Length: 277
Image 1 (cartoon, one colour):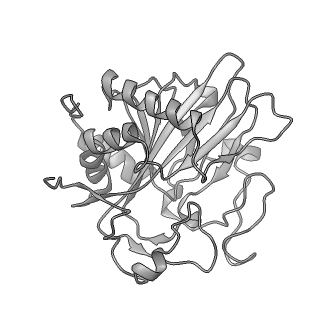
Image 2 (cartoon, helix red, strand yellow; image 1 turned 60 degrees about the horizontal axis):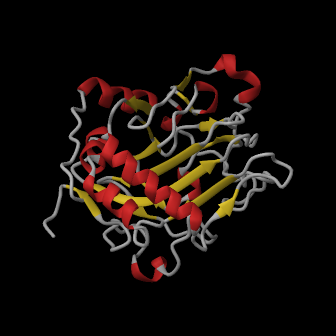
């Protein structure tokens, strides 16, 4: 990467909060140099989205919300950030796992004035994995206000799994309708829940479990919110092929990795412990 890794002194209190609440904020996890490289990677991604990219805002939205997935092999800035930062070490610590593998990367950019909310949801039901040792890093390269940040329902990572639905039209395209409990109306009864959320600066990260209920608001006019999310998996995660297209999709993986197998595959490289090149 051409720079010294920014090491991070993860504390036992931070690990315990992640384990108990399913979410924790880590201030100053990344150096200014690491964030500058990541910002350049996001801008390159926005200039040339992959075929996997999705617009997640409606046509009438005054802003624009673009997501893209699984670009680390094509975007050298993403590759350098994932493999050259403390992500693997810190993720393994939060998960209390001996290992940390990359599951996937996810770019989320809300341009100024985007009103589209990201609705309350869990991530893991959209995926092709089982297991409890996992961690997502939500990493902004722009300052994020409390109103626009990612919010979490503390403790919701303990389950149950809730029905994943499409964000734009609320359709159950994954598990069959009725097979999982529906999401509670968190937004309509916020006082019933302990909701966590933090104003963030570039270098900070919100870290959360893939079953933690989370959501976020839009962004104000004149504010931009470019975010890179990195999803890590630990010791107990296993492949769970689905009969439907997962989000993200891993085409052909079911032919190469049996159901119940550890995620030992080139798509999911080991970040911790480090392996020599």
